[in-house]
Amino acid sequence: MAEKISKMQRQLDLYCYIRSGAICGRSELLHKHYATSIRMIQRYMKELTDAGLIKKKYHSDIDEYLDVPNVEPTFNETTTGRYRQHLIRLHRLCTLIDKLTSSYPEEISEYEMLYEYYIEDLKDAKNHPDRYDKSAPVPPEKPVLEDARDCYHRLFPECSNQTMRRDFKEISYVKEVLYYPKYKVYLVTDHDD
Image 1 (cartoon, helix red, strand yellow):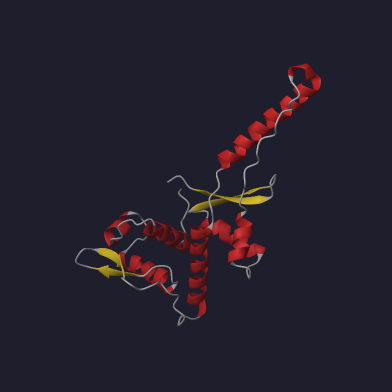
Image 2: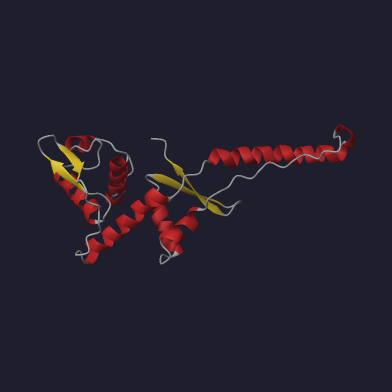
């Protein structure tokens, strides 16, 4: 049985789809399984708008949501209660999706492989110095790894580590955040969809 997708995950996926510049017609969004009904799509679009993430208006003549010209998306400050808390969290998660820089695990794998070769060369140079003409093996350059945890705390200094881990888990439907204990960093990768 397929894993159930939460409302937040559907909204994050919808947000990523809209940000990619894809055509946003109701029938297209229904086809992509972001919602089970037109009413649900309307609700999700309103929530993304209220969270200050998008500013789109539906045009029934062409069945498409289009950007509202010359209007920047702004957070709806009149919201209250649980709905407001949901919008704040939705805004935070979408900001994370936009701001987190993706790393490439292949770089780590390649570095580790080159480092193993380097260690073997060092051992070989120690055991057979005549094979190396005054030049010792050179260590590979360690890749620059941007820690997603640092980025998160720069963006949201008021949030705890527990909230950060929960947020990383929530956005994992769209971006994968992995902890590498050897390097003590959280790295972000995009899903291959």
